[in-house]
Length: 255
Image 1 (cartoon, rainbow, N blue to C red):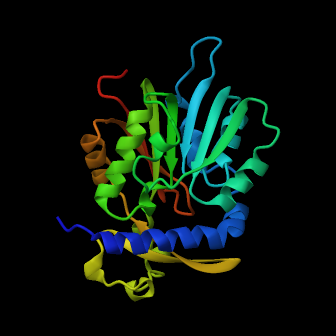
Image 2 (spheres, rainbow, N blue to C red):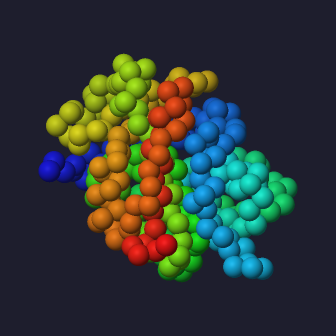
């Protein structure tokens, strides 16, 4: 299987870091409420022990809207949001001020860096619920996506639940017609992996981002490689109603 070089990978990571630094304000304005697909998560959310609070990690939390979703669902929890974009973290802190059920803490960390969890001092198996929503598809290279998922798996409590969402942009003609040539990133098609793409952002400001189509087959493969079990998939969101693939992961043998 084709493997991306380290140099190409770094170019794409830098492209996305610049992208989120540029679009933070516009991104926040377009991500005010919960995604439609989150309404289907309720049956999968773990329940804390009586008198305890759910321990939640939002890996790639953006503007903190999943914390507001948990508040909307009246879930008592201690929530840690991690993101690499300082501008989005600042907005997340503002957006979650005054929540009653959700105690929020936000920390800056680049999830593409090795051992980010150890650097933050996060103990193994310390979260009941981990969400990684619209994040994996921004990581170039299967090996890097596997590394992040393995890191998240190491933080998952024995009876915990890990939820992913991944953008299915290649299934939509309105996105495939917008694909940008690799020369824009100083690369060519031979430098990247199947399913990789560049897409524009034209809401308020203009910018370019790297994305990768992670379908069910790749999610299943990543789960196997990281010792997790797929408990279910479903599709939701977007005008088409199927632009995000949601996946529920647990440890093998877990009820």
